Length: 284
Image (cartoon, rainbow, N blue to C red; front, side, top):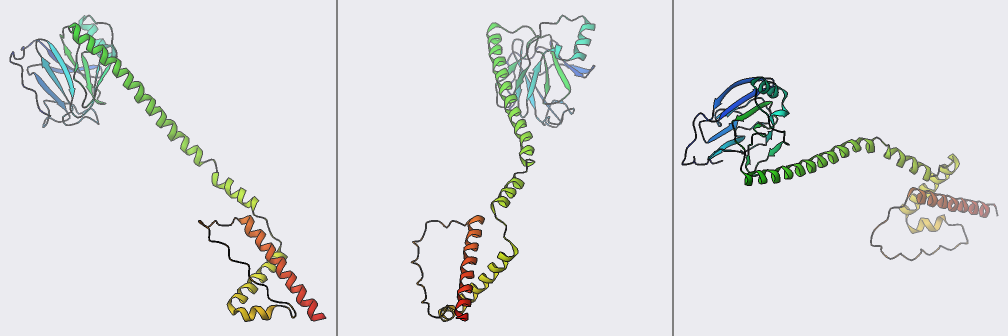
């Protein structure tokens, strides 16, 4: 971030003061003697260090003076909140003891990285860096000219809209995160398993035994060849011709459990008929 050049008129010495508040206590402030003051987390990269926030960057924001009596805040690497003294109870107590006259409260303004520079006003003269608890205040700021007041009102409306959209987006994310455990705990897998168990019929031990015998016989016949198939046929019966091959399908569809069970029962009945026919022929 490039530091802007100082104005040719220079900075009026001793006119403006930067006050620093930490909760209900006021720390030692300073007279603003430079046209640009950089705020950050360390004095190695900034003029004013604030270590009370976790997300305060090394170069967070800059307070820039513009003649004759304007102060603007520009975000360098982190957001800055501009608000009224009425937003802080500790500042209000100190200002009331000093007998300061307070202007009507205004809505806070947020300065974002890459956004426009925001000007301070007598009612919006406090600012803080990120989530820091330290509040800076520029005293003796005169009212803004009319053109700057209109611009600040447009900016405040834009900030309100941005805040509403951000809150709506965060609310949707929070609702989605809360809905995920409910879907996981609804027992979808158990329901699917119970449905599959209801779909697959249970076989009796006798049918299972016959089915196993039929499968072993089919495996033996396929391994021994066509001769063994002819020998297994009953005498006086001709070998059946195999059915014509079905045309190839575009995609292979796996049979369901119900279809497999139906096919197994048909195979058991077929093997049972073969056994009965062989027994009747042997008895004759």
